[in-house]
Amino acid sequence: MPPRAAKSAVTLDELAALIADLVKAMSLYAVQRPGKHLTTADLAERLGVSPRTVDDWRVDKKGPAYIRIGRGDDTVRYRLADVEAWEAERLVTLGSH
Image (cartoon, rainbow, N blue to C red; front, side, top):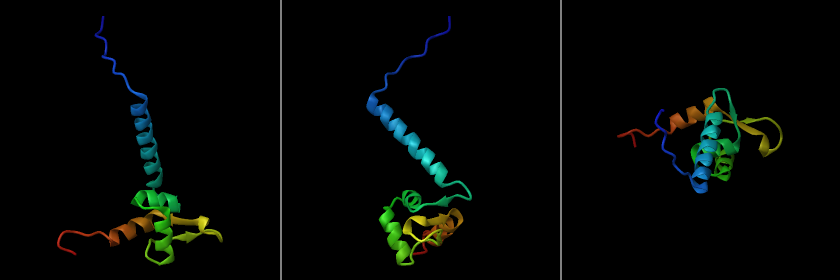
């Protein structure tokens, strides 16, 4: 008879935390796919800021280049390549500041 694997009990809180981590990982994967257009909420999550901050950057012309698909603010999209270029422009290396 093969040895039995030890059972470990998982609490509901631990299970909820694992599911939350999985959902976040899946969301980050979707946000980072090449050719994907990011929404304001996607970009905010990627950068760890609020969507309002991303909106403010766009209005103040401080954020990454964007595409306006329609007439409303909810139709703004960001190309991943533009976001990565904007991030690269802000890269601070030792001795460069």
